[in-house]
Every structure is written in C-alpha cells, then in structure tokens.
Image 1 (cartoon, helix red, strand yellow):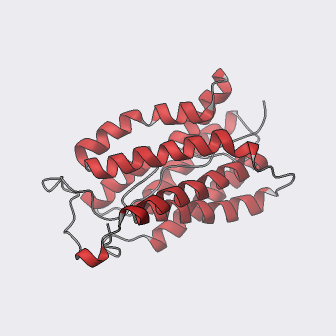
Image 2 (cartoon, rainbow, N blue to C red):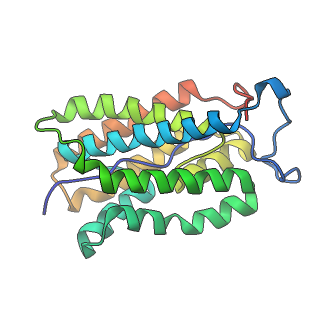
Length: 230
C-alpha cells in the first residue's frame, strides 16, 4: 500500500458565529461596520485558505505523512475502497454541516460548505498541475504544519472552516473556553496514532510532529475575542 496521505482539514475557527444565531451560545457581538469583511474579501480568503491547505496535503502525500480528523478517515476509506479522496472527504463532512447549522449558524455553515468544496476540487485537480519529486518528511512536517495552520487561520478569521473536528473545536472553545488549537491538536494526534496499522511508525511520528506544529501555531495565533472582523 502506498504511503500517501492527506492533511488535516479541520482546525480552530474565529471567535463568534454567523448572523441569524443570536440565541446560540456561540453568538458574538456585532463588530463595527468598518471591520466587517466584504464579499470579495471573504471569497479571496476562502480560496486562499483552502489552497494553502491543499498544497500542504499534496506535500504530505509526497512525504508519506498522515493527518487527523475527517481527512484521516477519508484517507483510510480512499485506500480501502479506491474511491476518490475528494468525494469521500466531502461526503464525510455532511453530518457536520447539520451540527454547524444547528449550533453555530447558517452563514458559517455555508462558508464551510464552500471551503470544503474548494479543497475537494483542489485535491482532485492539483496533482495535474504540481508534482514534487523529493520532500524530506521533517521539512514537510514543519513547513506543512505552518502552511496548513496559516490557511486554517485565514478561514477562521472569515468565519469558515474545513469541517469535521474544526466545528467541534470551535464549539468547545466558545462554549467552555477550551482553546481550539489544543482540542484540534489532541484530536489530530489521536487519529494519526490510530493509523499505525497503515504506515511505518516513523511516518506516524513525523505526522504527529506536523499536528503539533499546526496546533501550537493556532493556539498562539488564534485566541477568542482577538479578531472581531466578519
């Protein structure tokens, strides 16, 4: 079996939620109108964030690293069934859309749906445009963790995510004050460790490093209430 993987597409989100959920425990106060993101700003952020994560996933694939959350599950199903990863990943996130719509808000859910769709498309088309001949797993773990964290932060600050554990991380952060970065790191490391039966242990170790790098980056860079733009 090839030691190919995907990157984590779930991660911490921006504080607060979308419009129309004033009764939600996650609802945040409306920021001044001058801080609100416009449609074009949202569009470029969703595309750029998804692109950054997609590039990371291709790096991980080349280096043989693994990932956590729903992307990790999609990876296992992809190799077990031969179905396209992008389609599996998109389908797995469907139940999370319902939870997000009910507990977080419709705008956030719609943006997340769009972001997941973009990432799925990038993963299907990306290999036709980019191919990495050699990539050391240490570089992939560190650079990929930071690049993925940056992409996820773009999405978070525009009230979007890549589904899966990201939604759960946001919910726990906003309702119980548990840092989303720490929750995400724990989830990703757990899922990666469960993949020991798929790839050699050293690849799993590098994958855990990537999850830690991303989790620390997000824990430091994303804190509740720091960013109020929507």
